[in-house]
Image (cartoon, rainbow, N blue to C red; front, side):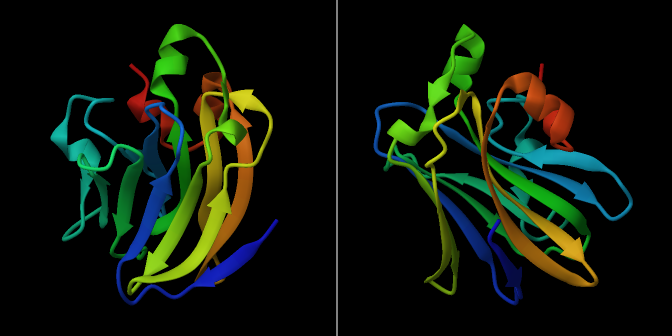
Amino acid sequence: MNSIELNIENHLHANLYWEAPIDLDLALFYQTKDNQSNGVCSMEYTEKKESEGCLEHFPHIKYMHDYDFNCLEKIIISSLQDMKSIHICAIDYGSAIEGEETDFSSLGGRLDFVVNNELLHSIHMDNYKTGVVYLFCRIVLHESHYWLEEINDVLSLEEAYNNIPGFTEICN
């Protein structure tokens, strides 16, 4: 497992790109230092604008969708100060609703982490398992430092529900 120490003085951008004609959703799920859990994602999951987060106050994370470019979604993190862990995923909502599974490795996708317009790290969708949730990584607090740890796994809805803190918040 690759891991990188994060020193976020400016905003950290997590940009999801893919090439296939499919609608993926970028989502981030977090657990705070006081063990609260929730998610930041498109309001289409919860029908609440608050689900898209806020940079200026807690959770200091904001979901952004670029409607001009269909195969790009973004999440911006302005601070990690309250976080114990964060999981970043791509979800194929259409397949989840239809009870189907997705071969994410065929989508030409990747998650880029960018700080100050410079690429910090990329994680490619290269796991050949099928499912509906692609778990790219987690950001975890360890001995007062934050680390980005690659996970690169594909999960079913049930596995995501049981293993990702905050995932339950988007399941209606």
